Length: 198
Image (cartoon, rainbow, N blue to C red; front, side, top):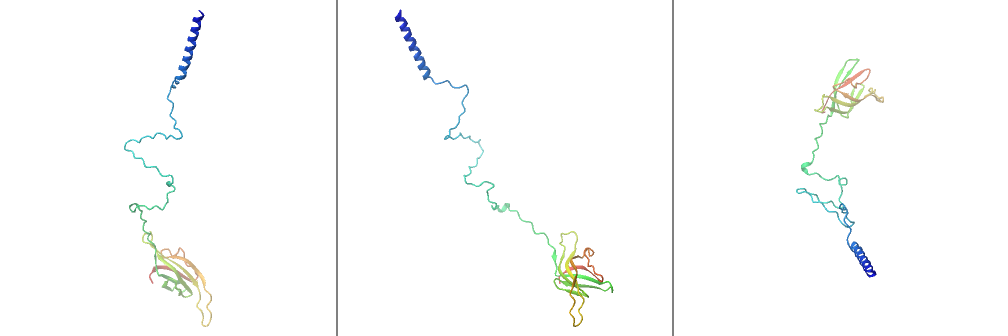
């Protein structure tokens, strides 16, 4: 009887030891869902293949300039070059001004030509025209304008030093609008008629 119990106990221990060894040799069962593949530090992620017909440009070099760093002096092809518009029509500069003057006391009127930069005397007035120009063809109203200085200087008597001149006008005169910037003098009046070549 004792022998039977000893044999049964030995068989039971042998079976338990075999079961433990079998469990240790068996790998664990997989989890319910697939584990995501995480690339290691040396592994490169799997590249996706582009769809057919799609071209992918080659990668830029590490030292290649970006768009903001591209020099602004890159030349455009001749076909894409933008032509500059022609210079707008400029006013015509003339070499002389035609001026009309009147003596309010004697009603004497005189029309004379004053070359640019040359002083011209009318009684006690000395006219010096600095510029005379005519409006360009593309301007609305045709006009002539002259920039001049007018000095009042009486004539010197024989053997005497002439008195110093006194400026009575400086500015632009307009032929189309003589009252816009007129000469203000108690005895004389003068205005621009036109500009022309001397």
